[in-house]
Image (cartoon, rainbow, N blue to C red):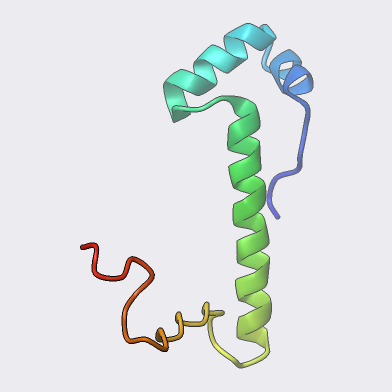
Length: 81
């Protein structure tokens, strides 16, 4: 992964901005706080590694199984459409 995890305090200190200022800049530029952004980036990294390992096995991209058909022929909502 090209980036590594860091604390908000450390990043704001490296940028010579207060923690509160860093949060405001992050909210204004990205639309979310730094912790939420870190969680999303971490999740994207996990997805990228999973896709890379699935591609290396020759199985192609990982896919979720489709939902099996209902035995009654109706979906979960029944006839309430």
